Image (cartoon, rainbow, N blue to C red):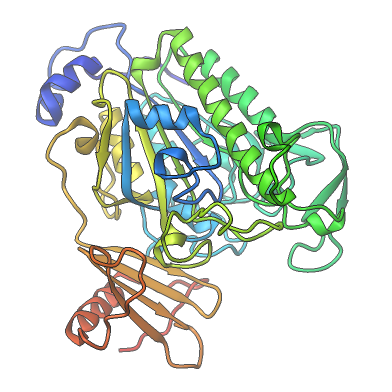
Amino acid sequence: MNTNYKTIPSLAMITVMGLGGCHQAKKQTEKPGLQKPNIIYILADDLGYGDLGCYGQKEIKTPNLDTMAAEGMRFTQHYAGSTVCAPSRCTLMTGLHTGHAKIRGNSNVPLGKEDTTVANLLRDAGYKTGLIGKWGLGEQNTSGSPNKQGFDYFFGYLNQIRAHNYYPDYLWRNTDKVPLHNKIVIADKGYAKGIGNATVEKNEYSHDLFTADALNFIGESADTSFFLYLAYTIPHANDEYWLVEEHGMEVPDYGQYADKNWPEAQKGLAAMITLMDRDIGTIKKKLVELGIDKNTLIIFSSDNGPHNEGGNDPLFFNSSGGLRGQKRDLYEGGIRVPMIAYWPGTIKQGQTSDHVSAFWDFLPTACDIAGIKTPKNIDGISFLPELLGEEQKTHDNLYWEFHAQGGKQAIRKGDWKLVILNVANDEAPITELYNLKNDPGEQNDLSEENPEIVAELKNIIHQEHVPSKEFPFPDEN
């Protein structure tokens, strides 16, 4: 890979000048030795809005993420791309919401050759790009495999069902299988038949391998600009736990929660989240040791709301943080997620942002940070101005669709949120309207009192949803 790329101004210049100055500075003579800012995007899997201490969690300890929030920016109105794994990750990578994206459900549809990912763009800009963890957007011999979608390096799971098991028999490193010293049994029934599995001999925990690999990637990339997408699987459940008659919250030990008078699955969930928090702290320390912490933006978020799988009860820890719903819902609890942005010396400490943003905003944000042109015809808006304390452009609306459970759609415009259920069923769709400013818990359906707002939002939905072969929805018009 050619690393003799142009550079952008130092972070101090970005901070002082703001966006306008940054754009002006790109035209100036560039000095050797400067590197474009590194970007680390850490994604949790099924972590709820209320699962972190900095978002109100009382029982599960997350000191490192809480410190990141205190020393950076905590977003209160950030949304995942969808309410399940694959489509949410697709929006993150492509900058397209689920009305436009290639992948809109958890079916086995890969990204195509025509798709442009944030990794493609950053690699073309001279970044070393790495994906460690869970992919879920294309198998090895498809157009959607990570190495065909802009990643120089990949280590982890390709298949999201195989990613249920934290003790797999193998992982992928680029195009090669890496055998692990675990003994599995494979599901012989259900939707995961022949793919999903559980482990009877547990020796190598995939999360630990991901953290070790991430530290190596960072160490080997310290002298260049890099993008690391660290897609942890914590705290997703192993849904095939029934194969070994245990709960699905797999973790080496319960740690500080071992003696709690809690159900075993809840001990597992808490231990998983605290383990992830510990390892994020280790990554932060690595950046400091390498002297690149001030040139590195870390973003932490989750791909959707909390789950009720593997024996877990999301109500036990109030994982949705008082919001309605969970994973697979298009209510706030299913799609509003924590997001923390940490960039010492650039992001002013202790900031809380109520800027309304979504996963599809990451791609244009990364482009702005890298000083490259954002592709046309995407749905995202860069939130770099918000990080820098500058004037921030806002969305006219945010749109989601979910192709399961009869089909669901949702749209947010300002404080209004419209949710439509049973979209693809023969039954009449159920339409609900909420005012999130007055009713963030979505308890009071105002659709009958506001037919004109319902009509307006439905009209926007028809514009935002573009039917595809794999993911059609009926057009009420």
